[in-house]
View 1 (tube, rainbow, N blue to C red):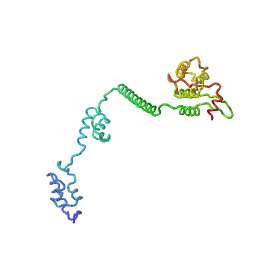
View 2 (cartoon, rainbow, N blue to C red):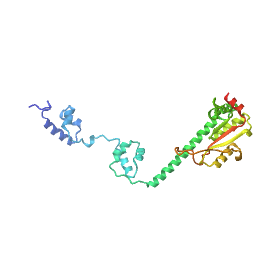
View 3 (cartoon, one colour):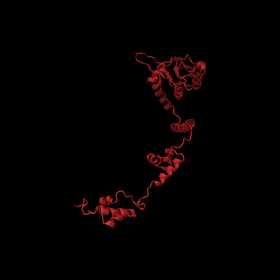
View 4 (cartoon, one colour):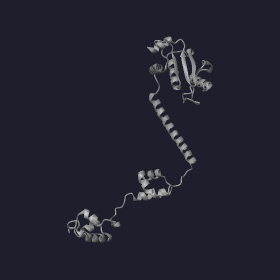
Length: 272
């Protein structure tokens, strides 16, 4: 009966010879030339199960990385550290060292928390320095405002933040409310530009009932260069238990309300 491999009818005999050659250190190419077997499928079947000789194995480009990864792991390095050190993927690191025992933690949980806090402090310091540089650069880019620029800026500021008269409730007077010190200083500078006498200004603090009202008065008095006794009775906001306030702490000073007395004409000009 014909062998299923056609012209390679003596397959078993060929296999015995191929195996002998393989074990003798022959490569597939050498076995092919020796036995005149030029069909790769048949050639692979003849040596199936026989490992190639060492000299035919190509060196793995990552062998050195693998050995170095295992050395570092045994020294207690983490996956992240090995990944950065060797410039390889985390999956490769895991494949190479996962059979090794996990290193003992270098720090206690308390020490780890302390290191994280220290790192966060350094990060915030760096970020704050970057913010300062950005603000300074922006300040220098704008430079000093001309009277015309301040005039237009003040009108826009009142348009956004000032009190407006309504058709159903006409109140033609200039009233301005804000909690931002820079905005308050700009508004006061604008009133000075318009020639509004500071004696016409009335000041009142709008603040939450749990805040330090005396401290708020001192804060706004210093900012506006006025005496604390100048303030009218503050407007107190009652606490709503359904809301969670975030404007708390020593930096909370409420809002400053600035009213210009006898300001109907000024208000109509602003509307114009």
